[in-house]
Figure: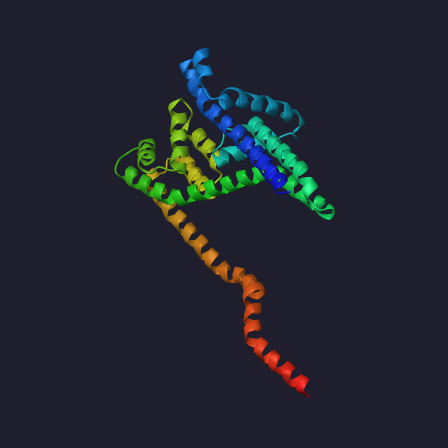
Length: 301
């Protein structure tokens, strides 16, 4: 029994490692595809790359292309938007994401098939549903967590970025030059997105369109408001420095309001742990001796 359990665990770990291996191959292949096209590598140079980049990643892409025929209409656009907000696109596109999700589902069912003989008869349905949910929702939950964390990080970085923009613009720099200074001095997720926006403007995209694309890639409320204000200032000829100063004040007010909102919600959230966990223990400590004395008194009558 111990050897069988060890084998099942080893197979499960191997399947999960396979899913991670496929994902890493897709990511690294996407990161290096541009450099390969730019340098026009020869066949010998391509063969020197890793096996997962050379064989597994293209196979995952082909599987994803086949699976896209069975996905609902609009799923690819929604998946690519979520991947972009999480910072994984274009390293992982919709086709590769569909292949990774299928690998996770197949791996979970394989592990369930091996674990099934060890599970009691009455619990097999529950274990099956658990593994099915793990395979179907596991990758999506990881993407959602990465998406939320990245949005939170960018929302925290935005006030400092705007403050530095205000200082740079008031010192005499143009908006794009000030933004380039921010990218150099304030590393982070938000600076990476601004750097990509500046690269788009250098290749001929208008600043308004580049800012709109930035808003779609990030989906942060504060940043969307900032981008809308920048675009309106360009259209109506409003002073950029004055607008940046107003935006910095508004964003800090919003941050203060969010902190106050969380502080006011804390007592309400503490009610359920108090009632379910702390109060029963207090009642046992305070009332148990009295209850024992009452029982002893009644038993002596």
